[in-house]
Length: 254
Figure 1 (tube, helix red, strand yellow):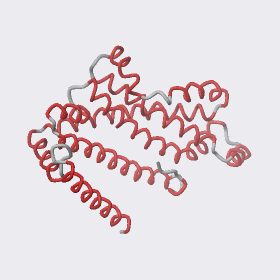
Figure 2 (cartoon, rainbow, N blue to C red):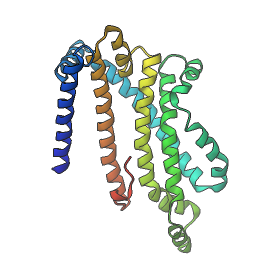
Figure 3 (cartoon, rainbow, N blue to C red):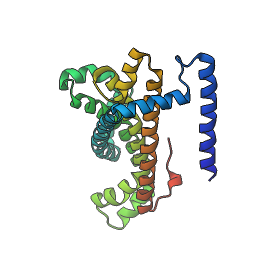
């Protein structure tokens, strides 16, 4: 109840400050909340918002899922085997500082201007937070757990399946949530520069008509996508953690 009231108070405060700022700066430069709402209704009535939203969600979901499917096993393997970690970690630490948008032109040359290049960009943006957090989760496993399993005659595969993976789940979910944020950032950049639809495209082209209200609609839609998807993912993560008997308090929320 307290959290809900705090959230409501924060939104009320934002709307008040927003209204005051819009009044001072001028409605054409900074739209009022009501003007932004009217702009949203206009976009919904024309069908533009729905179509752009569905396109962006499809790209985000495809890239994020594929990136997760690739990154989690990679992180587990790299974290589990020291020789692999010794070889691969320098490359990970190098490329994780290269933003996904830096590869956009290259991906357009490789994959064309269609959906593949945009999904590939999201995959790239998604993978590194997941890989790094998964590796950290594996490395942080208490050696006593592994020694206890070994003393009971467990094979390496059994230890990996019964000890390593469950113990890494909190870190994996942290990485997956961070990867989702990276996916949203990547798709906005890609849609602004190399797309004919999507929320990023809507935000970028709205400047041509000086429709700052449409720009704010796009911004709020992106925030809503991120907030809702992260909330659902966190709830799903809690279910998985309970399955493994792990308390949610052990996870780091980013």
